[in-house]
Image (cartoon, rainbow, N blue to C red; front, top):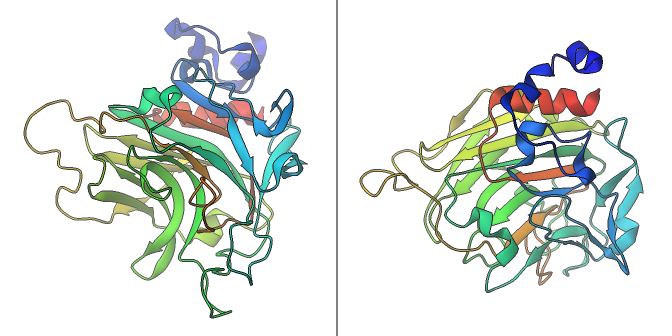
Length: 309
């Protein structure tokens, strides 16, 4: 209790929520633990198959470490209590192919263990990111050696009808008005329009080379609001699409995402079914969290401090 008081975290336990599961105890804020659908700290390979990462969240959805397998776990924790992180990178950027190191999972019929995002009203994606190479990466699908990808893939939840690219909720860097921006992007209805909330600051200032940064994106499909955070602090930004792209006007209420199981997660690029390379990220990630509600600003702030303590 003395340590919690020093950190200003004593109020976390006053809400009467259960403590987090043993695998996440000490790294996940207790108020977020019951909504923690998936948590990947890259410290827990699946026994007998080290190319899979165990999910320490409630869904138990194992994550595939694609193309690099166990070698993608590297000794470079983002915070004091972390030992490992996940290395994501291109292998042969001059060749068209699908050998980039990325992570995720994919099922054309949907992933039943991710049913928490089926018809959800809210979601959050959080985690640590460190840029470790050229970003944006060379476009391996282009014959022009100077052509770069128009986005840098971070982490997303796929829609129920995704081809491996379309998302229900996404934390990424994409082109907005001719400039690469850190964004929260989401699509409420499968096959429908997406809305984007873009951070105002230049992405190179938000994600300096070789520096660990804690990012968070929150999504509310009922109110139509999104938010971005860096190291626990909200980022100024703007909504990109005018009008009502999520079709929130009118009945029924409340508004929810499509009632379909997501086809998976994508991390470090598109197409987790590994059919092609897309929007590769030369970076490392640590302690990725996928939640089925929008974390409050104070929770994002305390989650960052909780890990840094």
